[in-house]
Image 1 (spheres, rainbow over the protein chains, first blue to last red):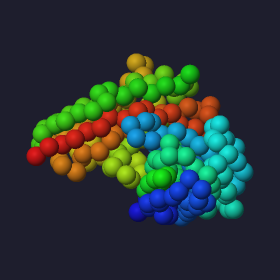
Image 2 (image 1 turned 60 degrees about the vertical axis):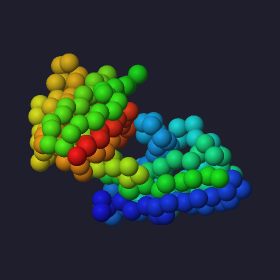
Image 3 (image 1 turned 90 degrees about the vertical axis):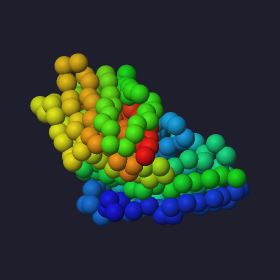
Length: 114
Length: 113
């Protein structure tokens, strides 16, 4: 257990469904991140939240909608996804301005869009 | 543009053998470099983290080296075990970019009995 918990671990959804991924961190960090990892590709940063404020959105399609209600919780709301959105979605947290120290990943949600 | 290149892309070794993975980076100004191990379908787990002033760091059978002059790092795995089969990712932090990290593409290691 890394201190960053993601649920569900696996998710299969149709293209017309709406679902949400959840991330919770118990490390006292104030920054949280969503990454996408497609097969045989490097991790792609999607969203960054510092102190609950979104500070980075790497040209992510609007069918992905993040929500950060507090510094311990992060959601990724999904709607009308495409099959190419199937990937491992990773959440991470860190303490802001510590240059990557303490950067901790969750175990990921394996998403399959059918 | 910050980049991290890893080699080889994949590697197969026999159990008990040693291996070395390479990482070259162009991230500047450099803050720190870390190696992660990622099992299939799981999140990356940190193995080592090194700053500019450190040129070697060990974590059990894993030893990372850093040459900040040539901007190269290596991860040496000693007496490999089947459980070492995973992807190993080199990640570099830019001291001007807050918590933004640059990820390498990873080396996929398979250890065979």
